[in-house]
Amino acid sequence: MQCYQLNFHIDEASGKYSKDSLDFLVAHDHILQEYRDLGVFPEWAYADLLRHFPFSDSSVTWITFHTDKDMAFLMKLAVEGGFGMMPDNLLHFMDLVRKFFPMLYDVMVLAQLVTRWYNRSLKKLADQLCIKRIGQEHFAGSDALATFECFLKLVEQYVGEGISVIMGLLSGAEEVEMATVCSLPLSFSAISVFEVKPADFQHQGLRIHDTLRSNFNVVGVQVTSILYYQR
Image (cartoon, rainbow, N blue to C red; front, side, top):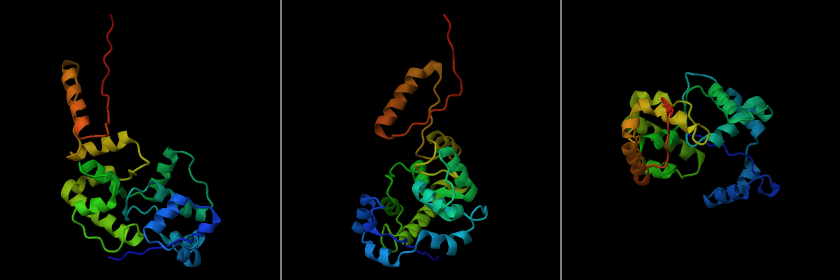
């Protein structure tokens, strides 16, 4: 297995970048002067690399981590070399994602659905799964390898062949209802299903209340029927 890291041109003095993002990079040992002097311009990346990527190829599987913003950036480069029009709403954005990446899995979505202990950190996910990181966190090559190994371990331990039902769901850019519905066929251990009927509405309501207080912070509600009462 090989991992490559492509560092884009960043000129912190230009004022085009978020100060918080620059501070984050510096805090994790990125040398901004090297990115300014040696960094690759996005249009070069498109002309020499991205246009050769297997976009829209269903035989290629893309593995990502918390990838809403990363995917938007990548597609911005891929759509006519960064000069094309991007979608103006989430629905069209997701349509474009599925066009460019028909086989795509977001490890954060998977981890949120199958584990009770996950807290949105790639490092802690890798630690919990006993995956030894190669390289330093928050560097693309090391993060990419850790993401892939986490994906393989999660599929092996929790999901198996049922992984296909969450294909194309992006963390931060997908409907909670869709993620919940897609996860139900997998019988994920981190999901509790309560079927509420009029006869035991109060009892089930208390169960849901107690579950939320102790274990869960996301609720998906699916209404299968509505009863109307007329006096």
